[in-house]
Image (cartoon, rainbow, N blue to C red):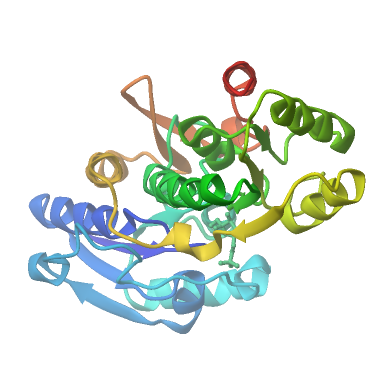
Length: 323
Ligand code: F6P
């Protein structure tokens, strides 16, 4: 393999730049040509490519976002879109791909490989940590730290005014940020997409806190859950109990930005080097993961059939600590 294309796709995540840097540097180290593909699959379809050298990834290790930019492409979800992308890759003599993104990005690479035979290795890059086959995804640690920092600040004002806050964190289908930020931020309750939450139970719990002289409370809500948004849940709680002075804060895209933590930088760097080495050894149709501190290579069919749920034990721990 001589020419490898690298791209980022889906929602950006802190640490993607560290992964790009690792792919480019490892590629050059192993005597490959590395081509950057802008705007994920959108740029692949349009042939928006740029040759990358050692210096083109200088000073990006510590930066959030992605220098290659990212997109969610609807055209690439069609066989016609993927055929256009393949034509561009062929025209530019790209014979392998390394993509950094979430489950949608992995699925896209898998289809491209099945239909046109382009070998690829995927790196898990998403703040949601919802991809099976790895303990952590690139960006999750930074996003959760950002959420915890915001929760700590909200706690200060909640305490000063004896208020109940509902804080909505990201995680469309996944409660990883919510449960971990909830434990670290001392939440009274954590509402995650994977579980149905009873509003009556929640109100009961909040009332109990009041009886035990708890003057302020924080409830962490993962967006997109079965139980509704933070705004909707807060409204339902208000209807059942007027006792609380209730506020809602939505952290939103704040959680996607910022300098990656040391953990995400190291994770991205290790995975980036492993991606180049494994692709060169002939591995394909795999996503790299780190499980119990060991590099693993997950075949698409082996991991993408099951959703990755938060650890049940974490829910239990959060509950014990919130009395
Ligand atoms: O990348 C994951 C994520 O941040 C989810 O947590 C969130 O639901 C979604 O992306 C938001 O996507 P967009 O930025 O495209 O609105």
